[in-house]
Image 1 (tube, rainbow, N blue to C red):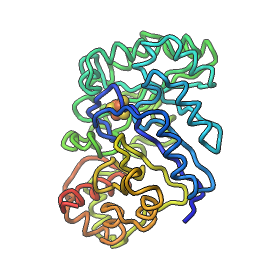
Image 2 (image 1 turned 180 degrees about the vertical axis):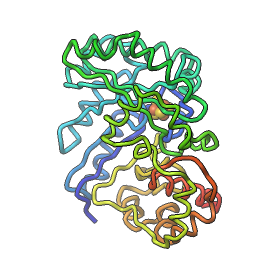
Image 3 (image 1 turned 90 degrees about the horizontal axis):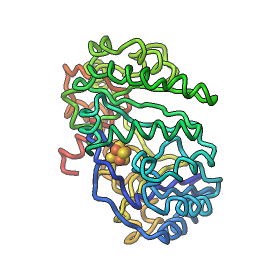
Image 4 (image 1 turned 90 degrees about the vertical axis):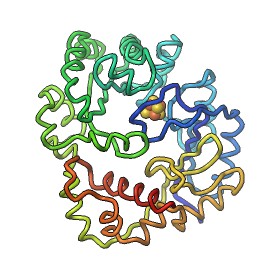
Length: 349
Ligand code: SF4
């Protein structure tokens, strides 16, 4: 058993936030020693031509020794360490060196998430003062010649607050300030995948009618960001349309890839990076079972969710758990994962 590339992400320290839309869930934070990175790398290395190691899958750079962790991950990885365009706004406002360090890595943009007004953003981030910190983080990024990219998760409860975010972008002159150092401000909207904490918002899920409420400012930026022609291309089709299509689809599918990504939680449980790290996706425990057994479970589709998708025709899963009249908008894959998660949970898998 040899994979072309394996990417492993350890949730070493968790996250300072408790977002109400978090697809990864808001489990307690861990405190893994640095040495666990080498342990995890040694476990997986015999099974791949190329290994990539990350010390986080929730908040990047949250612990004090973030620079050391980045260096250790780079050393343990077969390709040079890459810093995604994601950063910790918690750290940006508490550690003046952090913005400079991100800039020294050549980062040109960093994504920050807003939900609307201060009250709404604090509510969804699950932490008082988060909105104020996000605004301060934008200024720090710009000082360091990094363009903020605003992501907005929308549902029917906060879609009416998009005007507030548009005003904020204009009042803070984000476009011009980024242009001034040769950067490019950007922003986009989406509904997120309907798993983890975000599944709780199913009843407030965005509908086709709601798309009319999206201001032209956000429409233009969102289409540019995703390279799409219409908002429907971004937000997907109604549950009703997907339901009708999928109840005629008796296919099954494998989630096994030659270059898998695995999320490893603070207790060393391993999950494929497909949907929320829930028990029905668990492939085993790295300490107890070792990487060989975990990878065999993955390759043989033995997690309950993989096994279900591989053996139960899609039409049965959707018939059992879908809503024929559902008006919410989903991409096809996100809808299948919603159905699969519900099916596994409700079958007690
Ligand atoms: S969405 Fe990101 S910042 Fe929010 S709780 Fe999840 S991992 Fe943390």
